[in-house]
Length: 200
Image (cartoon, rainbow, N blue to C red; front, top):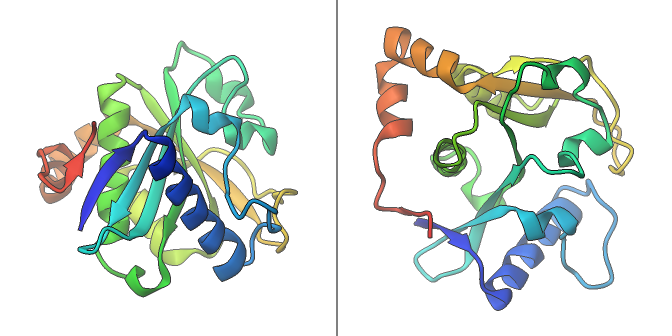
């Protein structure tokens, strides 16, 4: 398995098709698009990563969106409001998807590592993401990383299924202090270079 930043138009199309397969056909969260691709205007501003298996097939994805004049994707649904105060440099992790056969394994954590390392390379002070209430595996990973809930539950009107969501946020410096003091294995995992991740 390897994880790489995707930039070429052909590779991006393959990634967008994978997202469509997971979010639309597998999970049934979004309505199908005639193109069979799941992309939006934020993709042009983002760092898109794909996880590839030994055959080169896409088995996972994550997107790192820098703050921009249009705001962040999750703000289309639930504004961050006061969380923006204080000169924070915020990025959002989203389009997190793992192929059905690879769920429950290490891939989710390695994708999060790629996203976290990109945020660090961008000198982001805070990372935000949204997650579904009741998604135990993902939420457990986020909480171990030092994410905290910053919104009440809300309904994502872009979704077909009624799955309440929450926004979680991570103060990178506070999280890294937590790792150093209480979770050294986590600190080593997220900080150490990884030959399986190509940040391009």
